[in-house]
Structure formats: structure tokens, C-alpha cells
Image (cartoon, rainbow, N blue to C red; front, top):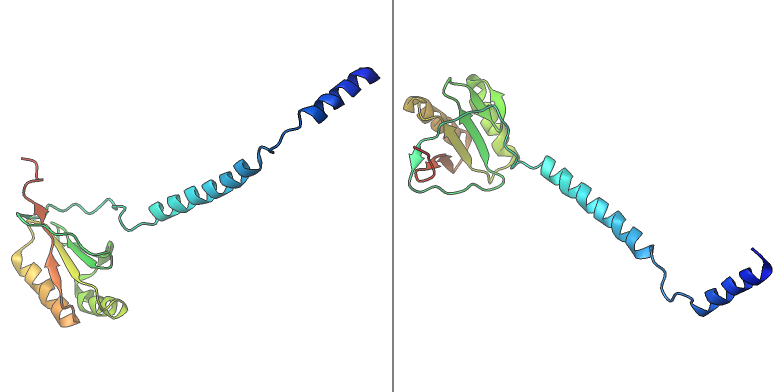
Length: 151
């Protein structure tokens, strides 16, 4: 490249000078987008709405089914008689103290009993009584909508 060629390139550069710089905004936006995606993935991974496999219940059917609040506590009783309180295995002998301790941590919470359809009614009533003695003012029995059950 000779001297005349370099002068021609410089004169073109002076004549066609860009008014905007590209690339600055894109990189800043990418950083915020990455942070937002990581935050979303973290929230979804730690969300209590993610169902945990392992507890299989065949709930009784009812025509009216309501949802639960976010801070309500769940006590599940399987067909084989295993107790799970907030997805942790529970010894039936420790039911009263565990419920009392949980209620002290969250006094506004309700207790939802998820009992399998084949669980004896006497077991459900015993748990209901233990919850009332522990201090729960609201105890609900979980059911499934009769319309959503496949034949």
C-alpha cells in the first residue's frame, strides 16, 4: 500500500464518519438478560410448587375443591400408613410435638391432611385431633375434583 492509498482511506474515513457507536448497548443488555435468566432458573428450581416424586396418593373425590395458600402445611398419609409432614418422613409417635413446633414457627398456617382413599377413617380422626390439640385452628382434608378423575 502506497502513500496515496492511505491518504484516500483517511479522507473516506473523515467523510463517512459514523454517528453512533454500535456494541455498547448490546453488551450491557446481555449482562442484565443473563442475570435475569439465572434468577428465574434459581426461583424455579427452589420453588415449593415443584412436585416431589415418591408419595403416591389416591385422594377421595369431591365436587368442590379449593386451592391452598402458600404457607399452609401438608401432612400426607400413604396407603401403607407412612406419614409425611411437609415432604419429610414422620414417625407417628412424634406427630404432636412436630405439629406444635411447626405451628410456633408459622402461627397463621392451616394444616392440610392428604390421606389416601384407603386410609382408615379412625387414623384420619386421630390426626385431626392431634392437630387441634397442637393449636391448629384450620384443618382441611385434601380431595380431588370428581370431574378431573379419569374413568
